[in-house]
Length: 330
Image 1 (spheres, rainbow, N blue to C red):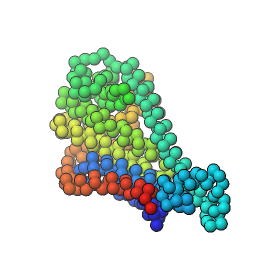
Image 2 (cartoon, rainbow, N blue to C red):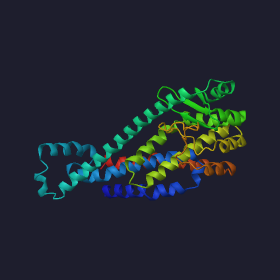
Image 3 (cartoon, one colour):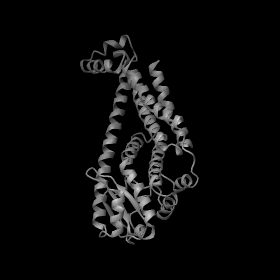
Image 4 (cartoon, one colour):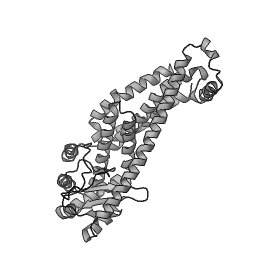
């Protein structure tokens, strides 16, 4: 019964739930609650996907995963699983299922580690390139740096551009000369506050986790839905942070002038300036449509009622804990 529950949960969380949540309109009214829910869906889905073959495979060796795992390893090591074939002819299939579940778990962890290492290396190279190309500090760049609260570099490009570079030893806000010249002081401040929110709320880690999840199980189409949805939610959260400190018109005009499709926390460091002198297009992933952000800002909806937000936030950890409980308790 427990295996069937985990299998059903894996199917539900792998397809209909991400599709429905990705289409839900209420998330624009409560992006923070929606972000928590997306994390719970991903965690519960991963545990269920790994858990149901693992639990079915370990069933002859114990009632719980904690109890059965040592017996499973011992049986494989000393060959004692062979006499059990008389009682359970499905035992070779069970061993294969448990092994597959462990291999999938190792694959997920390894993919996350590789993605993190590659991202850190790309950011390091990108930061070196920015330091190389950065223009001398000006009065406006110093003002932007004070607003951002992090070191700020200005690229000598006429195209309005702004993004953030998270780092292990310190973060960096990158602006272009065109942004400082073409936007008003209020608009620049709104953009910088938006980028600071990305850094302060560590949106780079959230997007990194879902990017790794998508890479690990790219055969599952809904992982792409989750990746795009989380990218969109990070932009909504950063926009809300900017709106809390600056005027709505300043933020809207700044977004239009910069043509932001979502300020990327993990810019493509392998891109470099082209021969025409334009800055690298680090916003070409298209994960967050500009029209979606503008629609939300131009037609603001009332926030989701507090009881509904609390209900979503409370339901999220319960959802994440449910498959874990099925794996650990008989």
